[in-house]
Amino acid sequence: MSILFERVAFIGIGLIGSSLARRIRRDGLAREIVACARRQATLDTVIKLKLADRVTTDPADAVKGADLVVIATPLSAYAEIGAAIGPALKKGAIVTDVGSVKSSAIRDLQPSLPEGVSFIAGHPVAGTEHSGPESGFAELFEGRWTILTPVDGSDAAAVERLQKLWEATGSKVVIMDPEHHDKVLAIVSHLPHLIAYTIVDTAQNLGTDLQSEVIEFSASGFRDFTRIAASDPVMWRDVFLANREAVLEMLQRFTEDLTALQRAIRRGEGDTLQDVFTRTRAIRRAIIEAKQA
Ligand code: NAP
Image (cartoon, rainbow, N blue to C red; front, top):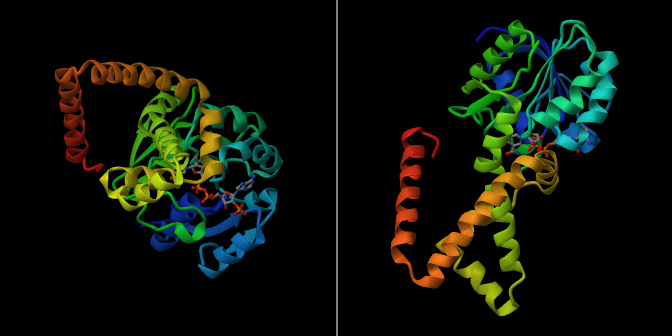
């Protein structure tokens, strides 16, 4: 692999940032990596794992001279980070992010970035329920989609350079409108997380006698929800606040469909239940065929 960027600065280096840093390191995709986090303990781990050439707690210091800046923090930190790095960015630099909501990312970052800097928001649709730099791995993006959401006036050459980087991680890249991205992710990712958080909390609120059995017999379906519901609470708080409109819209539709199933169960309408369950089975097959299982 050839060098795609001279100096890449990561603002936030947890699961996603460190996975990208590992891949860049492993395949020599950049000459130098700078990492920024809030806590010294995180930076000590980054040094121990040899994920970066230089570390700092100061975002403005981190981005100096960087030709690519990757923001990989929770979404609620974006506006403050934008204000901090804006004046320190090099002319010609590309700024991107990996956040799970794109309209809010553009709203919070774009206004602080100076002319001559290209901001191309992005989202690798890959992850786990773990957090922090120890949990990353270089193969995380292999075979997964990365969605880039340039807006009118975005520099086409910058989009292309960023696309090359993500493709070099093994990811497939698609360009999407930011609002469309947020709607799609609301149904495929955000709503499933909300349902998982709810069902696990409902079980948690059951009496203690039932609770121990919930754990014992979890393999019958509950266990898969607990994995999703173990995802980072701060990251997911931010996702729901940042993608409020789209999530509420999908939640409304879901509630209507759930009510329809509730009615079918109450009335003993087996055909309705079987029809729905047959249609949903086909979706699972399509996911397996698309190698996204
Ligand atoms: P993570 O493992 O928790 O890491 C977050 C990083 O951001 C840490 O280095 C943390 O530094 C830093 N940070 C946190 N708050 C900050 C603040 N206020 N100012 C500056 N730095 C801050 O998170 P992650 O899972 O990599 O997620 C990062 C982003 O990727 C999120 O926006 C998320 O929506 C997106 N994403 C996540 C997944 C997933 O499955 N996890 C998938 C796709 C996209 P300290 O350790 O010093 O606090």
